Image (cartoon, rainbow, N blue to C red; front, top):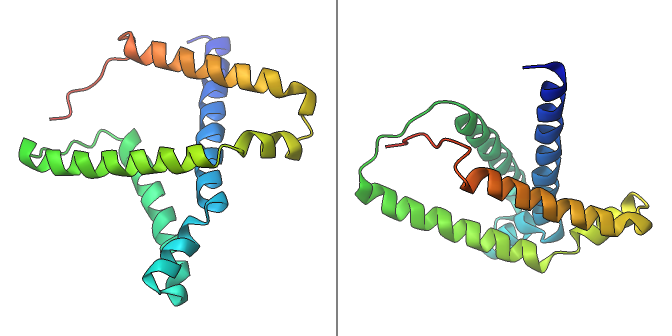
Length: 145
């Protein structure tokens, strides 16, 4: 790989990480997810454990995602696991959509009021390019089972 391509790939990885990280941070802080869970379960004294488990889970699954770990499970186990993961993802995106004021908070924080249209256009084209890159088969998906 030439140096320009390495720089570009590093930049894309960093930009994607910042975007996903800020979305997760917005989800956790703006929705007060952990305090709400402890309030509902009446376990306020264990709030630190909830926070540590969330951090540990994110870290472990990040390492699993980037490793070549294969889980040889039967399709009967995959169905409920997939349903649970899909339910979580649906709830996650729904809650994040309710708190879509992430962009205005970002604009106010970084004083980018006049650049808002460019930020939104960049997010749209970035999402479009990523989806086309993935779904047109440029990325070869490994057989997981």
